[in-house]
Image 1 (cartoon, rainbow, N blue to C red):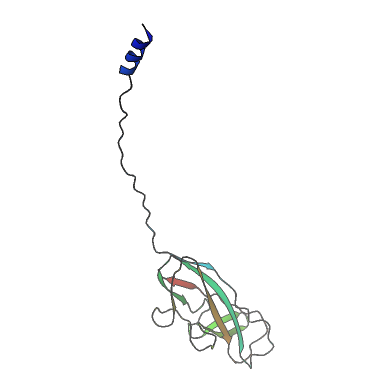
Image 2 (tube, one colour):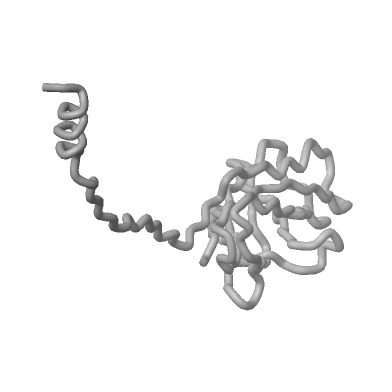
Length: 158
């Protein structure tokens, strides 16, 4: 074959145009409302020889809720028998020491566990919300020496 004939044969054998098809792929995620107590502190009223004057302390804890999730934080009456959200009790084998928990620095708003009444409301940001608990041991008769304690449960309702 001559050079010209070879070019004509190769030109006639060019590949056909490529075909293609397209579609889409969906990506989804469902975010559910969620809250958790991310950290908690200790109300340490220290050491006292008398309970004739009030002792005030504070601590904080963090709550983590998904963004835009409305929540309420409640504190129960504690684990000691006879304790209530109005007057919680620290106990030892020697007796009890009453104490109160407040949601404000003026120690005037009781922090309880009834949503819409004495809980602390908020709205999640997706990051931690740090809340402060203000504790007070009011003046009272001083019980026998000992270490007094209680455990309060933090509940996040959302």
